[in-house]
Length: 201
Length: 305
Image (cartoon, rainbow over all chains, first blue to last red; front, side):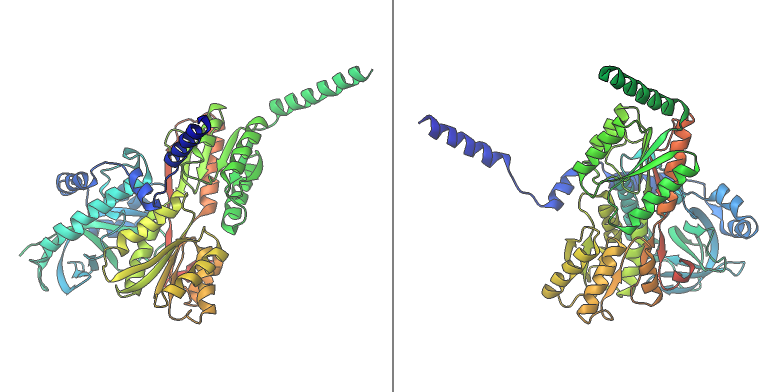
């Protein structure tokens, strides 16, 4: 009788001590409950759009040509170690092409820019803004999730709205993030991930 | 007589040991997840080289991708009187306890390349920016496939944060294009042979894949080998991550599309410098230091060795 009870207890304990879960489920459970979407909305509308830290494109280009170290130090933002940095820039120009992937723009100083409205991904805008720090988040993964939420707001909501009013031939003002590397060819066409595009006339 | 001789030997040894501690420079342990992968051999040897250049004694401990071996390594190096650890963990969660043991013993730990999921254990963590690197690979992937097609992903070790940072960066882009369909996602443990076997199995069930994204270059080479054997090397696009020289060569030959260039020597050098600064009294280190990963494609492969 005692043996029977013992075996039943053992079976119950054994059954309840082992369970199987999908790896993805376990990983999802580990995720933080932080509301990245709300934080990203606030960062974009209350922080990035209102911030006044963008450098004029013409000013940056001239400084990068004459004194790259000074340009990177004054206007670049690099988290950690690397050859490149992100810059928040602003400028004016005329739209000469409108494609599914973005706008081709010529500035008053005849510089050609590619405004990439399709592939707004990665940490360029977050880091160029200089408004959030890695130490604000417990892990790199959380810090990257903020970029994803921020990019979603800009790529799926803000920029498509701006683009509705923009056509070839329009004069525009734009601001956005760009990545420059100390080792890159200086003749490379500048690509900008926009945070705002607006028609000026 | 025997007792006297024993005492003499004991005193002599103690004397030698004390002399080493008093006169010798601090000792640095380099604990590496595995020396079976050439990438980690470069990381380990660079760490030792930089530590020695700074005037320290340095020794490599191989954890053989086994947390239990890693734990033994920590016990040994703590009892052997090492003064700092340049550490490449085997497991983001499982390795925390080892780092804490070293911390309790007053030994600073500088993580290299692989992150641990704690921000109060290691003195600093110098890590590749895997996520950003794989975002760029993801954009290249989408463009190379014209935004449509079936593909497979071969993950690294599932317990390693780098595996998920790479996969996460890649999917943060690719998942936004609904005509790109991932038909299989399996682990290849960062191992060339395993990746080859995994892709062979995937291709049996999904002979129509158009691309494969691999979590490191060893697996990209294994995947390429599987494709070659199946006569599909020209049809299926391969993407890797690491910047290994054999993959750079394949990119130049347009046999592999892209990889992310990591800088193990930069991480190892920074970790050794941090240890040096620690010995000289510095205590305020950034908890996490990302190291840039550069996209390598046929357009710029010539700039890399």
